[in-house]
Length: 429
Image: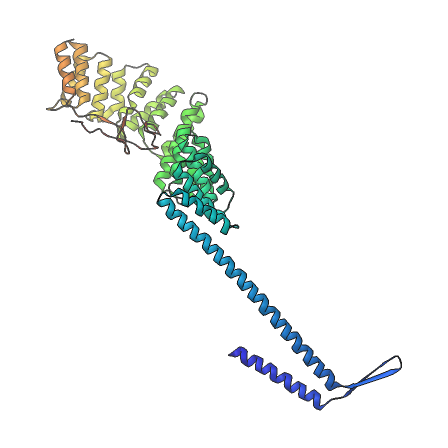
């Protein structure tokens, strides 16, 4: 409405101006080659108005025609794209119905209709080749996807999964890292990379991507601390044979992040012992044992006693201190008594552990005592048989598979990262 009034006002002003010029017409004269030409200003005004109207009509017609052609072109492009999208939907339906012939036909139609956008065609082809198990063609499609900005992430993920399936962990990590750098929030991409790192022992990369994941709030503080600690721990293990001081420093970093974790403490004690820091090692193991008595320390304690050149039982008493009544402390003391062939002391300490149904470990220790002290085959066999019905001791158990291990490892024997927990092994009937 406002536009109409605006045009009306302009028209009114032109009419008023024209009437004014006609009513106040004047003669316009000019001379060419001694001839004088004269005409009224009214004719000039009429010529100007007619010229303006012609230009206006021509311009209006030109833009109307141009708009119609543009509208037709846009409409035609939309129609072609709709056909392309329809072909994609039909192709996915055919794929779900395992009609690969129709799916391939629709894929060709997509390439025809969507010439400027290959992403849907590549996506459909990748699904077709995946279902048909045509892995060579599938790899080529994934490579093509990595060149297209719209499908780059899908291409990286596809290549990563293909290399994982082929157990080519080096290339799987390369593509996984590219995917992580582009979009670290993709579901399970961090966990997948961590598992690859654990398999390939690329622990420096674990520190890098864990820092990145934590800064982007992909993982919580607990996972961050545990994974960083594992990274330091594993690098320390690699360095311990040729760089003892850096190895000790890395283990200390691991223990700051995961305090008093037995595998880390054990490595720390062994490194200090190797570096001849015997009394500091004794101080650390004594503190660790007072906070959390653990069978993981047994060999480290025996080894440290040898280097200190002290009597094993006396050394263990100084380590155990006031925790002698603790079951783990008693077992350590009993094992030391057996090593030193102190049978009376071993029997004295094991009495409290032999109840109505002693644990398997206690029964086997009792069998060792009988073997070393009396050599009575009947008693030895009796305790060995009794051990079959005894409860198992605590072991490192994978929370995913329930498989047990004697020693903690970053990657379980079944291939799961940081999945081991120290817990009671259930008895099998």
